[in-house]
Image (tube, rainbow, N blue to C red; front, side, top):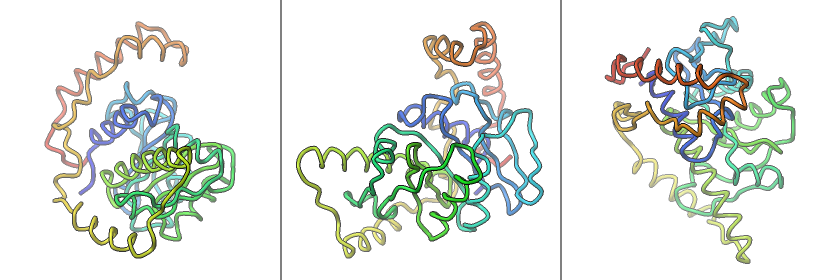
Length: 267
């Protein structure tokens, strides 16, 4: 099932709620077909994002369709899709615990059962943000079949067969990093051995199986009206725009949300 644009908006809000983004950091994309990708725009706070702000990229021609510029990391997303036909969603975030691990240049081992499908999460070599070099490094790391990689001094990229799976893994990487760092501070880390990892991979593959219609329910998560007054004030200072214009955007967002279909269909 192809996620709807509203589900993409919901994913951005979940990143903010999980403290994996300050609103403008990070990006999300989904493969819509063999030729096109839908991606979040550059520089727009997730809390102000609407379905109309999402950008479509043509994987073949590189053409961009939409009223905004695509995320600055669009090269990274498109190259991953080109090299991983099994991947239908990519999430990049700057969670503090996983970014701390990336700054330290460590590998996060499998320390809890539910992280078995991620395997050990290593740190890729450093490359500047939004560069072709970074896109190539991430693609090379993930085309081996891994589902998550830390970016040195930057953040993390995770992939999934669906948007739901990619989001779960995005949150799990952060949780694993936090648990691992806590265990190190407490004096020792006991990792799962290969047999335990294989056993849990098999168990969770069945345990997590859901009907396609359960991808992301827009009805289960209220994506409108979640911007606080303080969020608007802080963002207006960062973005250099007026508070009044932000408030207007929020009102338009809420009206558009109420008039949008909620049947979870593709766009």
